[in-house]
Length: 113
Length: 119
Image (cartoon, rainbow over all chains, first blue to last red):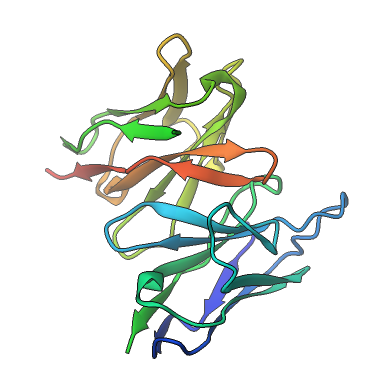
């Protein structure tokens, strides 16, 4: 199976400062149809995961434009331009269902300083 | 609004079976596949497979082959996960999630069902 590795595993950020999370895939996530099957999810404390970014760089409905997904092939990044208290939680990258089996990164815990 | 509401927590003995349900509302149930995932304590999220809520087609992760069955009751908009031969390593929070084809991702998740396996 594909292995997804995230870094860092934890992050403490001052409100208003930027944050960046890396996700590296052992296999290419660029499908022959041109789509990149990489999603980002945020699991806030005590909640289910919620979709942030789909197909590598598209923000889901209601996601602030402070969140930006980028990358292709095997190397991906999630950037938060100005961290807010509401952004606390665990961030996961996920290999999309079109390239089964679906696999996840270990998660990156974001805390506020 | 779209909601996936899962059944309550379960405590099972090793070797037993468990059924988790996922009731959908706010959309046409048969139009979107339901995926099942789980999260064991301290572990990353693990994908278990999916069911086509329209025709009942299923695809299982090889990690669970032979122990897992997905089903659905289209008339009631409910999806089911059956897991048998439970062992302590199956202790986890189990999630259902709706697959949204336009985004190729999981746009709605259930609240999770805790299954604890202990003698």
